[in-house]
Length: 407
Image 1 (cartoon, rainbow, N blue to C red):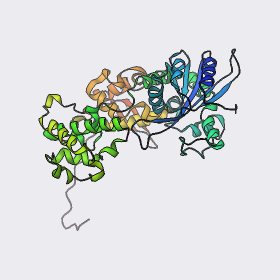
Image 2: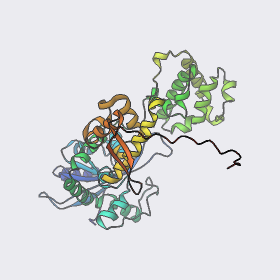
Image 3: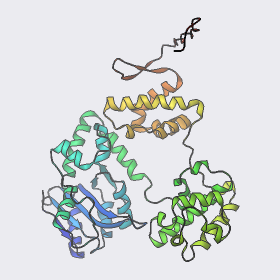
Image 4: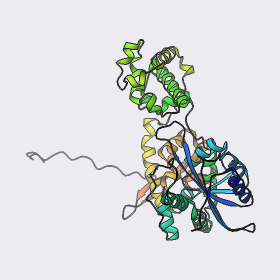
């Protein structure tokens, strides 16, 4: 493994950026904490790059507690491809720390989903494809402490030291199977996906049973959850520290009008109501009571009519079989929400375009039209085949013989 260089000064970061300007690919990972804060607290950035005409391969560990990493935005904005593993949270962290996401991305977890490795960890992929074992000891260590130990530095370096080699092997298999374009399409979709915290007015969607709320309870839930979201951002604490979910639910249902009533809410205690909190929560409740239906940001409808729910179950069973047969991660291919959306929106849904349409869309449309049927083969395997239009009649129930005893 290439020896890692610790970057903890402005000059060292400038030198690193100068070197990275000429690379076509770089591997990147981050270490951060967010257990006790609203915003992720970046603690380390790991970057590795392969040898090229401009110089040898390298690996750098950037200490964001010692130097501002915002200048890395120049590299992110460039034409090089960032190789990462399970990049969702890394993208969020980079966007906050550097003000942008990378222009191009290859996510090895996403790519591996097209060769039969569903949601696989980096260590398992490195073992499967490269025959290497990554260190595990410091995965849950405190990355905000300084100085970092040698074992922490070794662990952090290992997260990027083999990423580009791993990507090459996986992409080689994808290219041979004609699926490299699918992986690239999915990685581009990941880059475009909204990341980070929700809009405050939509925060109530995450509350348990939010879709079952009716009448004024919806407006109160929206306003109280939105207040909680803004308060958490302001004081940089997790939303559960501001008000527990249980308290937001209970407030929405009971709609307290006084401080005494608020203090009786389940899930609340004195530490939640310090300072201006009680007054601000009651103001949010009052706003929610008066909120008109047209001002409520209702959660998206994910259910389908009960008459077609059997179609979702049937299609889900077939897609699970298709995923096994084609060695594609079933969660990547289609979720139940995707199926429900396809039933509602057809070609406008995620299954109606791109690589999913090629693999699933046309066959699924035939199944839902009734032109195809799902059948069992010997051994329990499901197959989709042309429908015979010859339904089998159920055998009539036989009346018990006279004098027959209980079964």
